[in-house]
Amino acid sequence: MAYKLISIQQFHTFQLQANADRIVDLSTVDDLKALKGKRNGVDFVLIGQGSNCVFLEDFHGDIVVPRIFGKDFKETLNDYVVEVYASEAWHQFVSWLLDNGIYGLENLALIPGTVGAAPIQNIGAYGVEVERFIETVYYYDLDAGYEVALNREACKFGYRDSIFKHELKGNALITKVVFRIPKTWQPVCNYAGLAELNRPTAKQIFDRVIEIRQAKLPNPVELGNAGSFFKNPIIPNQQLENLLASNPDLPCYPAIEGYTKIAAGWLIDQCQLKGFNINDIAVHDKQALVLVNRTNNGLGTDLVRLVKHIQEVVYQKFGVKLQPEVRCFGHHGEIVESSEWERILA
Ligand code: FAD
Ligand code: NAP
Image (cartoon, rainbow, N blue to C red; front, top):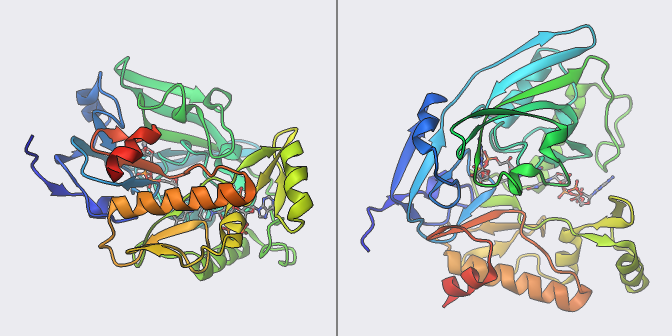
């Protein structure tokens, strides 16, 4: 079948060369109604800033870009209640909160993406996850054809996880997020780089997070990437004990009861993979968890080969299977089956 090819290289921060049928802008909640009965990730792909998406090949469908803006807050006795529409840029939102004397989200400075995407993987950094401040997520339900409000508990937030990746996957287009942020501010400074700060203000934490991130992470505008490519594995404590016996330096942190989070970047680094590349797609020199598109000429097949190579080498050395955090897309939408990866390589 012949496809009208519109480049979507600039619609995802990894910037692989890929095309789609059309780019469709949505500027009002009413426009969403045209999508009733369809599925995000199958019939179309909704894109915020594309910082957690990689298009490995042409997508045979439409890219939908919501353009729903606006933010405001009101005060109660103890809290700020902040309403933000989905297309607002995350970092600018955090910065605006600080300008208005609302503190708590400063550890999440400089995370790319939109406010609407933040609840989906419960974005987190430097000891803070966004769920801590979310009161309600509003979404347009594609099956039902109307807007639904979900409170924090109903969002089933977990580590880089939420209901939007499971029961509501493909069916919920997030339109607005309401945050409840206590007026009593507690700094979170348990991560290296922040622990050294002495009685910091929220603005000092914000500035320090930006400084660390700029030193370590490639700016997607200059070097295509999608942030951490793999999730930090959460493994049973029994498996951890076995791993620690032969790898006493393995960085590990308590997770849910009986499980421990281990650093995926450390595992990749120990396999001497920093800088390893397949054609133009490489493991970043400064942070092994980040894969980069060095020249913007990289191909999806090279990325798939690199991902499989990393997974195999890490598994052979540590017995741990790394799972992508990034969401990958092919001709027919989001790729969840490994057979699709084989098809791309064939
Ligand atoms: P997109 O990539 O456009 O979309 C991601 C997925 O969500 C897609 O499946 C899309 O269909 C869906 N989606 C997007 N918007 C909506 C909506 N309104 N309604 C329903 N579905 C939607 N993540 C962290 O958690 N912590 C970090 O510290 C962090 N650092 C990063 C650093 C870099 C350099 C990069 C490139 C990425 C980083 N990320 C981090 C990942 C990324 O920034 C987040 O996942 C972000 O929330 C993605 O937002 P987005 O608008 O770009 O989403
Ligand atoms: P890092 O400081 O080198 O640490 C490596 C990993 O160990 C991190 O991923 C972090 O897990 C974990 N960790 C470190 N100190 C911890 C502590 N005190 N308590 C619990 N866990 C701890 O990591 P980095 O790559 O420079 O990233 C710094 C922060 O930015 C991390 O929170 C990371 O998640 C976030 N970040 C995320 C992305 C993304 O795309 N998802 C990209 C860049 C940075 P956590 O990841 O669970 O925090």
